[in-house]
Amino acid sequence: MKKVLKNVLFLAIFALIAILVMNIVYKQIGYGYFKKALSRPGITFFTRDNKVKYSNMNSYKIENKDYNNSTFYKKIKVKRNTPYRITCMIKTENVNILDRAYKNSGAKISLLDSNEQSKCLTGTNDWTKVTLMFNSKQNDEISVGFMLGAESEYGNVSGTAWFSDIQLEEGNINNDTNWNVACFMFKNVDVTISNKRYNYSMSETDIKQLRECMLRFKQSCEILSNENMTITYDIIELETPVNSLSYDEKRGYYIDPADAEKLIDAYIQKENYDHIFVCLRLNDEKTAIKCNNWIGLGSMEYKQIGFSNIRMPTSSKSKKYVYNDETNRFPEEVFVHEFLHSLEKNSEKYGYKVPALHDYEQYGYNSDSATGLYNWFKAYMASTIGDDNQGLNKQIYKLKPIKESNFKTSKVLEEFEDVTNIFERLKLVIKTMNTY
Image 1 (spheres, rainbow, N blue to C red):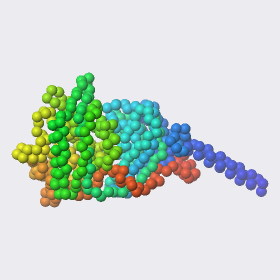
Image 2 (spheres, rainbow, N blue to C red; image 1 turned 180 degrees about the vertical axis):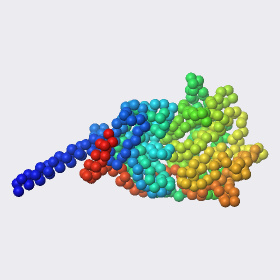
Image 3 (cartoon, rainbow, N blue to C red; image 1 turned 90 degrees about the vertical axis):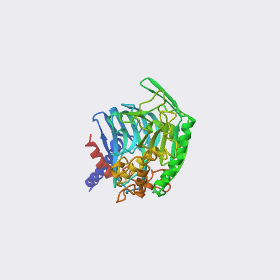
Image 4 (cartoon, helix red, strand yellow; image 1 turned 90 degrees about the horizontal axis):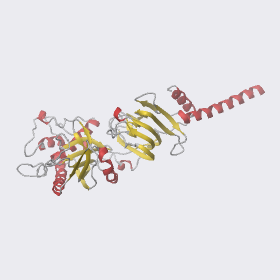
């Protein structure tokens, strides 16, 4: 009997020690239900850090010894067409981008296989709260990544990032059809390109024309949509010069959301904007920055908010944005056009079929010298194209960008809670060790 008790006691002590050791090991290398992914093997280390942490929980640490794209990620079940908010505390140390022209890179939260991501942290930062808000759209499952890098090899980064206190919330849809629009007028541009300095300023005439176009944009959207939507807007004139531009072969130089972030973010945080226009001058009669003749650019996003460029014409005498009853009855056309690119993009994301905005000729519409594509936009927004009434689905006017107001009565979910079950921890430790 004594021998049996000794054996039982021995087994109990052994089990206790094993559990303690397993817990220690789990806290060092166990990353719960997260999986890891990386572009280049052998140069990145994934661990749990019990020294550098925001709260009592060990942080998730990614260390890129060389330039890489690395992520902890987890697949989670979601409800369709539902707002979600992910928050996370992130700390970085010496995070450097391989190509600094690639601005959407660093330590961030990202939805894998999509272009939805939080702001990116580079360099060295103390613990910073980072948020990603999104709509699940037609998805039943998504993969959430806590990333050190970017989706492009040119955006690969080196350095270290820690992720902690991850929280997921489920919000509520707001069915309001009023779109709140921000129009930022960058009155000054001061950039250096290929060692040549370009400096431009908007005139009072430029600003007056843009203000009149915004008023007409509001009126036109309401009429063209057959009153399915309304517009409110703010015009923000900024004196601080734009000193950063982005470039690609198709567009030439333009202002990317990352170029504007430091100038506009304080305004965006104060208001619940649904679309952003940025207006600027990139040339005059003497010099010009290469912009491949575009007057407006759309389909971009800033924190999941539609983001459009509006460029002032080269000549200060241009009447492009001036109403004239005989020659230009639709001067706000570029504003409507670029805004519709965002609604077109949203339609695709939410699974609604809509004709391509540039395919107007295929449906029998042409640009008129005085009214431009007014009739095409009217059919597009009111959904009266062809015999089968194609165009924007009315639901699109309700599906605005997700904002803080969608989470006034949010529900906190447990998808990112750390594993506490002893046996589950043991299983995950064994699984983790098998991946090394």
